[in-house]
Length: 328
Ligand code: UDP
Ligand code: MG
Image 1 (cartoon, rainbow, N blue to C red):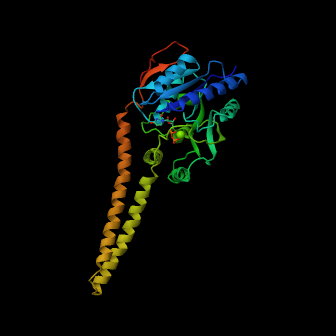
Image 2 (cartoon, rainbow, N blue to C red):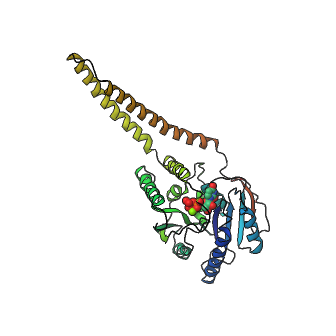
Image 3 (cartoon, rainbow, N blue to C red):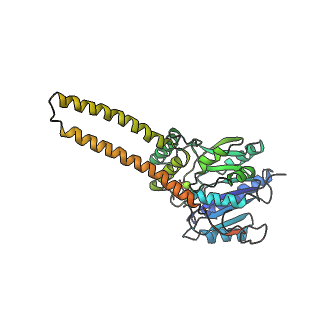
């Protein structure tokens, strides 16, 4: 018997692409069923992340016309990572295997066959990895690649060029449920869970329609979140800089005394100014980095729910308003 696949597709203002995404996924599912890779009751779950446009209406229509499509309506916009998690946590007990994919068709749905084959070979996690970034602008490619390198340098181990196109077995999802962090960064988290895993490479396409919901500002905060959620290296770096600065200032004090003793006490204004600005800058930066971590702790101790499911429309049990309206 083939396993039951639930695909999780987060959608935020995606009315322009959803009909096309649904059409292509329908074709894909039919062929996967024919090949015997997935069971006949496999589903595609669109997670509406508090969209302001007609996204939820389209999802409801899709569900009405084809029971292969399910939908989760979140009570408010929770962000991509939380929307993905909301989907995964909602289906973790009703699927055998899950795949997360963006709604904009940038991820290649033809990689799904290979992902499933790898899964049947015994892999619990299969990472979709971009083989080329030809379609991205130079700027996007450069910032994205620097991001992976910087992450690694800062001690957060992420799979290179892997976004959130990923297969996870139900077993892994159950373990993922145990990670309660509010500052969610799935790319860093899933490798931590472990289990046998592998990668499948695919070519990244251009966004089918609409605009990226990840402008540079969001991307930068995503990078900062990724680093500060997974590594305390920046804090250690501050300590190291502190030591170096102390050593330099000890030398400077000795130098100042020597100059004084030699009688050339009219010291330069420029050197004083420079050191004040330099040390001031480093101190503020250090405070900022420490502040980042305190902000993280603040968010974590509150333990607010990461998402709230307003409605889960899934055909298997009728139109069930999900029992678990918040995460458990
Ligand atoms: N998304 C979401 N919530 C948000 C922002 C984005 O669910 O607050 C979804 C979006 O609909 C898409 C995916 O996350 O399916 C990735 O977003 P996008 O394609 O805009 O990012 P990019 O590929 O440009 O990095
Ligand atoms: Mg995209």
